[in-house]
Length: 222
Ligand code: IMP
Image 1: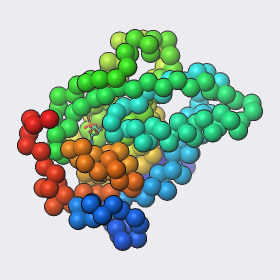
Image 2: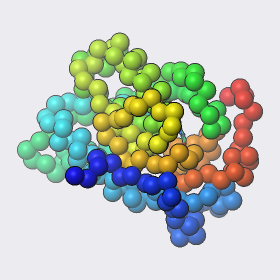
Image 3: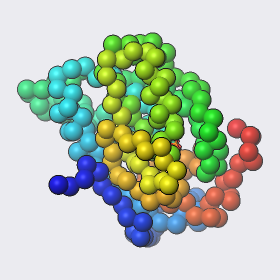
């Protein structure tokens, strides 16, 4: 049987930047395009279908993890609402909520994961919650967030992450829905950032060394 996610192998070399449209201001900063925007859309359409079939007529609160998850969140929600329009026999009333976490400085997890804003999580009590995240790296952020959510007594919690990185220091955490499993490289674009840069890039790309240097933030300056 096929895996429930698309596995991008370690020896995958991606697409050359010149084969797709990339903003001029990032041309020098990227190694290659790992996942073009169109493929993200197609994969998200399938994840939305999987979520829709699992939830079956129950209301669902989609919880967007800001800022990195916002594009995946809006595209997943678009596809879920399209299913609600087109399926006569199943309907999933949707609610949206937002939360902001912070854990990264440059390319290193600070280990200090903080909820720095968003909705009051008290409203999640008794709800079916779908956490929508951009990427699971070590898994620490998600495990911490799930522990926080549990305190608010939701009816159920599922997690959709567009990306999961293959990491030697992973906690072993796996989301319920995963778009792509990717090699251990720092990726940007499609709302994933490096020190707040690259959110305005459509494709998921691998940042190069000169990009990392150019947009380096001195530790503790955020
Ligand atoms: P974890 O706690 O190590 O799983 O880190 C998860 C968080 O780190 C994500 O929500 C992202 O904000 C950030 N992150 C990890 N890897 C990347 C990456 O390759 N690009 C951009 N952000 C990343």
